Amino acid sequence: MLKRIAILGSTGSIGKNALRVIDSLNSLLVTRDSSLEREKTRYEIVALTAHSNVELLAEQARRYKPRFVAVTDADYVEQLRKLTGGLDVEILGGPGSLIEIAELEGVDVVLTAVVGAAGLGAVLAAAKKGKTLAIANKEPFVIAGELLTKTAKENSAQLLPVDSEHSAIFQAMQSGRREEVNKIILTSSGGPFRKMSIEEIQNVTLEQALSHPVWDMGTKITVDSATMMNKALEIIEAHWLFDMAVDKIEVLIHPESIVHSLVEFVDGSVIAQLGRPDMCLPIQYALTYPERVAGIGERLRLEEIGKLTFEKPNFETFRALSLGFEVARTGGTAAVVFNAANEAAVQEFLAGKIKFVRIVELIEHCLNKHNVKISVTLEELLEADAWARKEVLELAYSV
Ligand code: NDP
Ligand code: MG
Image 1 (tube, helix red, strand yellow):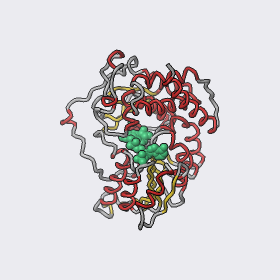
Image 2 (cartoon, protein in one colour):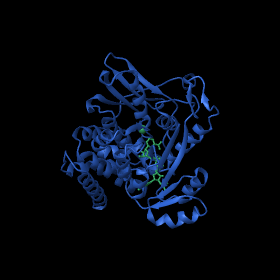
Image 3 (cartoon, helix red, strand yellow):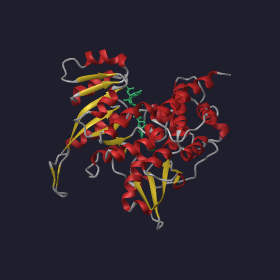
Image 4 (cartoon, helix red, strand yellow):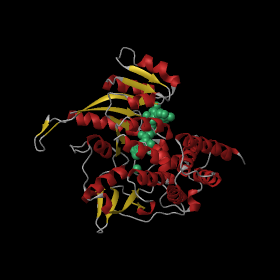
């Protein structure tokens, strides 16, 4: 069998890991899995995209020989053309190129690994075309979860989670029927500031926020993990992805990041998925689903880990978490504002222009000022997104 793959955001942390996983899947020595009596699947890379890192994109194009490469920042198209000179590859450019790639006839699986709401159009386009989506890019789910799940359903597009918690829930859910699920429990490492009080967190630095104790990820999600906005976004992602009432979603702090999430069934059984904190495993499962094949990661040895600990989240220091639950309950444009304000504020924080604690303050200001609309069109979602970004900049610099 052949699976033809497009990776949106191949130069990022998830994108690079996905290429490693695909290398490993294609290099599995057996051509036929004798114990399982099935043919080996080959993974062909049809398209790769980057935003501006054309050096790496060109290097990936030389190695994987995709038929298409796209760079969403149009200023880099010419440079990419020069860097890929001599290769038989079609070059696309500009923000719309992501959608063109997502819609390609010759693509079966679209792995969405771009960062932020920028991936929304492409995710929707892939769902409309009935593709299988391996979803790492959680922000489109947060802002347009209802529209996305509806579009996927109408067009028989399969939505497979890559986010480790959602992959864990997806796997644990296979232990029973959907109506037998009582609640889901998302785990969180707690990030670098897990033990801090409100007072202590006031003066943390960018460098501290970027030093995640467990996971090695892109900068935006690393900051989101420090504020716990990442978990807040994941609550909303889980709500839509698993059609789960917000009151049936819980968060548990688990600093070792070995138990990736849990599902409690009506009889009281709790089923969890465990693994080392390595994104290659959930990426691989989304690509090989419904099958499992040998993985590249090191095996989990619980005797080496010794102890797994769990604690309640600190809602006082991590206001983002409470806001996440509130926004998930409210729905509509609240989630759009929540996400867009965060993206804008994180950008300012990464540029060294605002303090860490200002990120969640700005998000809360925007939420308080916003008039939520519940049943909304895509245009209205985008309008709310643009409003929140502008609002953050105005608030951040008006003293
Ligand atoms: P990175 O910042 O490492 O990579 C982002 C990718 O998206 C890069 O290829 C980048 O291109 C591209 N990109 C950046 N901006 C745009 C844009 N405006 N339009 C199109 N493409 C763009 O992010 P991560 O890999 O860490 O995260 C990707 C997504 O996966 C996020 O939504 C994150 O929340 C989610 N995720 C990530 C995890 C992780 O372990 N990293 C775990 C779970 C979820 P360029 O390199 O040229 O800038
Ligand atoms: Mg996650």
